[in-house]
Image (tube, rainbow, N blue to C red):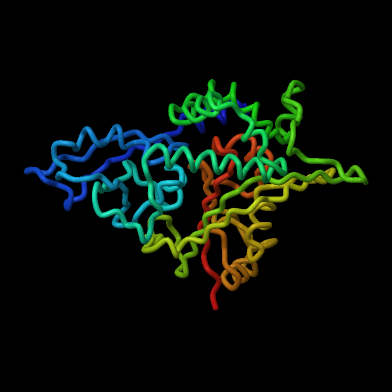
Length: 334
């Protein structure tokens, strides 16, 4: 079942309808939009070799400085495409209408991007960060041969899970045994490095999980996701690049709720409920005063907070071993 979940993650894709920005149109009539299927674990700049030939006859002369926007909102190229979609489309939009620009790069908002080279550098750097969080060092990434590192990157670009599965064990990032694997398989892979360690009393196990948390805070309450207002600026999103201290205590299950509460301590106990869960009148009033988690989305899945965090980590992480979590919260009333 675990392998099936990972396969779904790698095969996940978002249909895009790419419009050429009107300021870049040098032909008449303007070209129709391009239709592209974008891998969830991929990055927007990696789609340029597919998109540019479609628009080449409509582009003005000059040097390209390519970037994308959604309803005028510049998109950060180093965030995986699926994460951008989960974060910016509370109510999923299919196809996702994006605009591509070949001029006028907003360097005051976006860091420079030199195409695939920049995306690859960002991926490898994230891989090193994740290794340091998990193992306390990144020597397994640094010691990986150049050819293996190239093949690993190629497997991510091509969505080749088989090739990635052959190469990634060399990084020795480890696995975390979860409740499902213990019950359903006696042949689960043994933990490598960076996995929970037993303390002196033999009761609690801990590990550090690389997490990138994206939090949208909405001041006005809403009932339906379609009523969520559009984002005007990246300042509307809080970004946390922080490890989760995974705790496993005998007889207890460390859940996604536990993980999010450790990152967002202002949403603790009964406050950390998703909007689809039932609550009493008193709990509803408390949620209004303290704020409320309205939606948690990982890999396009609207998550229940009681799911074991170990399953989430083992199945929904991105290829650079980070778990990207998009959270929509109702801001507390003052």
